Length: 178
Image (tube, rainbow, N blue to C red; front, side, top):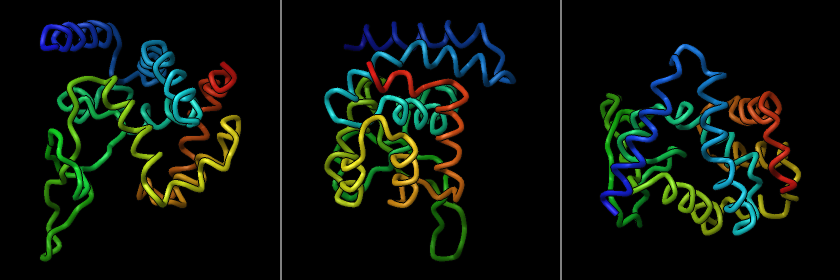
């Protein structure tokens, strides 16, 4: 497993080194090409639209270049929660201590991006406040995006609009019919 992880990380570094971090379109396209099949597989397993999974991963991992994605293989910004027993990674996000000082938040860490994608699906499947999402068709990325925001997935008030824009800009909806 360690050899696979090292190869995977080196592959990612090689892939992303050919793109400027100032060009999110190139980074997004490379990220989509690398992970679209995984998002499609997870869609068939879980019912979560591939477009939603890819859009969330693009946003949450900053096209796979964020410290959380690179150092912890967490492509979805999923925090530890009290029941998490796996690996952890700490960095400052949006949690404050009792004095109002920004503190490091606990995030889930994974052995691979594959583990992150699987846990993202499982997290949505088992968390009670996301259950209403599964009443939407896997072709209804607009309601999925709005539902994720309404359910509290992210603190950004424009989160749904951001996901929808990513889906439409990169035509991610095409993967929902695979």
